Image (cartoon, rainbow, N blue to C red):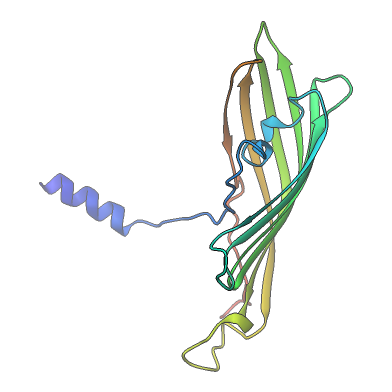
Length: 184
């Protein structure tokens, strides 16, 4: 019993980190957004746009829009791609632009793709859409506050004509967001 209490206290007393990533629900249509190793794995170039509106009819409902383009290079051993993402949910806005490079190794009947994305993201808080209980808050103003941070992701994928399996790691940098001036 003491071990359980000790472990539970460690879990509740330690620091917690979280990610704020957009929700992509069209995985089959837009596989490149989930794993950068998908770039250049097909024999053609493609450009796609998806728009996801959650909770239709509700003001300030979450909305995610993505525009991407990707394809293989001439030698079919590498791929290049890029995408622009915009995610809005109420008073919070997130936008990003990414460029991706992938290398494809052809083994005996199996292909192995490595993908690396690098980009920049803008996070914003719109204070004009907030109703504060007390006016005159020195930290949260009634204006738009934004910050820019670097971002990146890595992906690995095994694929054949009939099957693909992969793994990806998003938000490699884990950058802290600083909206406000020092001292506030």
